[in-house]
Image 1 (cartoon, one colour):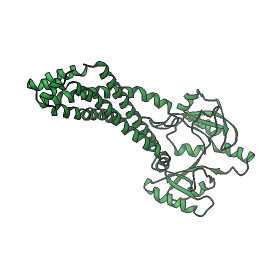
Image 2 (cartoon, one colour):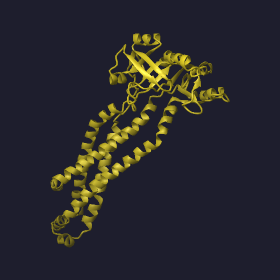
Image 3 (cartoon, helix red, strand yellow):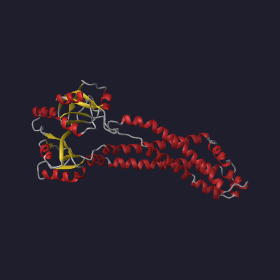
Image 4 (spheres, helix red, strand yellow):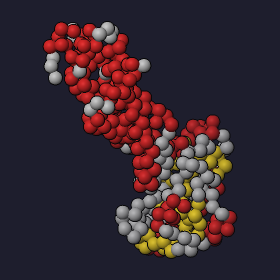
Length: 385
C-alpha cells in the first residue's frame, strides 16, 4: 500500500510534465487507432463481395471495354444463372470536387444480382420504367440534398455530352458496410446518346457481372468464360468479385504499406516520449532511491515505484487516446464516406491501442530501473538536487 501511495504522489509531482506526457501518449494512441481503422476500411469493401458473383473485364485493362453481345454468350454457359453489366461513367456534377461513384447499368438485371441495394417497390418500378431515371444511395442523397423527382445533371467525359437524370429512387444498404454513396442509371440511355452523337462508341460496356449457381465452381466457370473469348479482339479476364475488389486495393499497396509503417512509427514515438520522461524522472530521483535503500527498501520496491509510475502515465494516456478515437473517427467516417463507405472502429483496434500503450509503459521503465538498481547508495547520495 505504501508503494502505491508513493506511485500516486510521484505521478503528480511534476504536473505539467506528466500532463504533457499523457497528452502526447493520447495523441499517439489516437493516431494509431485512426491509421489502423483506415487500413481496415481499405479492405472492408471486399467483405461485401458475394461468393456467387464473378466480374468479367477486358484482359488488357479495365479501361478497355467489352462488346455488349458477350453477355448473351456468357449466359449460355452451364452454371451461370444471371448476367448484367456496368460501366463507369465518370463525368462531373456541378464541380469536379463533387466526386462520387456513378455507373451506367442494365437496370433490371443489375438490381436482381445486387439485392444489397433495396429500394421501395414503387420507386423501383418508376426507375425501371423511365430510361433517363436514376437511383442513389441515401448517403449520397443526403450529401447533396436530393429528393425524389429532382433533376441531376452530369457533364460527361468518358461519355461526352450533357446528361440529365430524374432521381426516381433512393436505396439504403441492406448491410452495415454496403456502399450508400453511389448513383446508378440506365446504360441504354447513355448508349442511345452515343449512337446518335459518337457512332462507334455505342454497344460496349465496362464489365459484366455474372451470378453463378455454385460458388465452389467459380474458378472453373471463370476459365470457361475466358476460354470462350480467347483470340478474340477483346479477350476477357474473369475473377470473383472479392478478387476484383482486392485488385483495386493492390493498386494502392504502397499507400497501405506506408500506413502500416507509420502505425509502427507511432508506437516508437510513444516509447520515446514516455522513455524520455521516465529517464528524466529517474535521474532526478537517484538520491531519493539511495535514501530509500538505506531505510530498508529493496530492489523490488524501487522497481515497483518506477514501473508503476510509467504504467500509470501510459494507461492514462492510452485511455485518453481511446476516448479521442471515439470522438474523431465518426467525423472521419463522414468526411471519407465517398471513398471509404465503411470506416469501422473495431474492438480489436481499441484493444491493440491500449495494449500498445501498456507495453510502452513497461518498456519505458526498463532503463530507468536498471540505472536505479545499479547505482550504489554512496554514489546516489553524492547527487545533490
